[in-house]
Length: 624
Image (cartoon, rainbow, N blue to C red):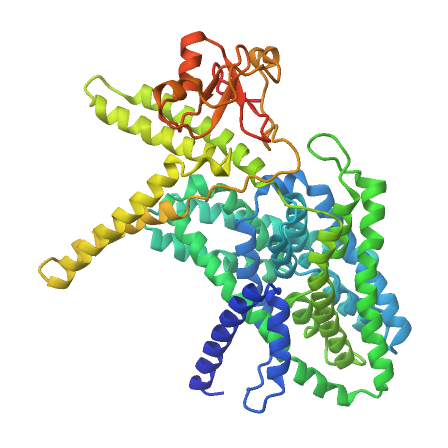
């Protein structure tokens, strides 16, 4: 293939992948399914060149950046909290599936048992991209998404080590002892190398101030972890995942804000392009796989029966493992101490879509294996079948079981609690740093900015019919001002009388401010199935909250008492739990709830908005 042909192929993959991804969002169909289907059709078009998806391309070129991109955004604390269930899925389930599928394969096909186990290892690991893409799209609970992400990040290592061991057993004898040592070294060596690379990258990043150089280091990190690990026969997958988890966890203290923002944008773009290309390439392999079946002596009926049996074995083995483990070993609990609903377990048991690693691992199977082309076809059928059956039915199953994602108001309350704590710390530091000669107006301006950021989060709670909040008004007005300012700068640029670097600097400053405003989350919907009572993160109680109770008879139900007298408008309402005074929140003009506290010393308020029952202690700045 000439250089021009290669370039045109890459452009076509990117263009088609991007267009199909956009189309999938509009028709509400998982993009991986649509991309695979289009790839299958395109593989039979005479003008589409044959593109071979080699193991080297996937395992060295595609897998490390995809794993790293997922790892840096996966919270390490969430993985720790769910380490038992993730470990039982990423290791136990993969080995169980390998055995079940291996036995089915050995029963149907005339292949050695080691070769059947090798095929079982190929189809055992669910895909990181497919499962979490569907999970996030339909809005599953965060714990389920965390479990699926953690499982798919780590299970590839188990499957690839099992595959390597099974292939070695095909050519000779492999003892249980040597297999255990191989697995232990792959896991321990991969984690160790990942930690070393993370430490090296962290050391370099602490000394980098240029965000462009920091981005270049970030792009190198997955390959710096993967290649040495594979060279010493450790798990390159675990090395990449470990490096990504550590660097993602430490990013707030290693990188400046510009570097973190650039890294998020760059890796999101890389992940988007690679994911689309990967699933399109999977579909493009069908024609070549079908041609390879001509070498088989098996009848089409046996081949079809094997493919169907392998797909059923893969799908069935997951709930056969998940439900007993959930009820016999884990017995997980929710944050409030109640048992995790069985519906959540059912979703995890059904979310077993396979993807690129399965198909890439199939091409690792030695060409000397009996019926290797049939095994490769079986891997494709499992990949496409799980994407089709489970990918399309998972949203329906979540609706039928009434499994819902996080309440957006609950998220807003938790964010408001955290933001309030951060604001309090920032204002305390301002008091410590302030000097007598500092301009009082500057100090007041800094206080207003900090408080406004916290108030903007609180404004997402409350009534949607309350009208435009102050932060929404600020957003609307400031975006209009920025558009006018940019137009004025562009007009000056077009005259050609000012140096271009100066103009670029001014435009960059405007872009940064505009991006900060646009990234601010819109006010969340106010629907909820039950009253909003507590934040997601646990908070300590205090004597004032313990003594306040949950309700007081309001002095009025018409609105803020003082706003009615003064003729001002309130945003949200608060109720004093000692005297029943109804006052407006800190985003309102009068801030009468806080003024009531300073006037009377009554320490605890609660929300007076419909469906909300959270409380706030002014004395300790504590949500309860």
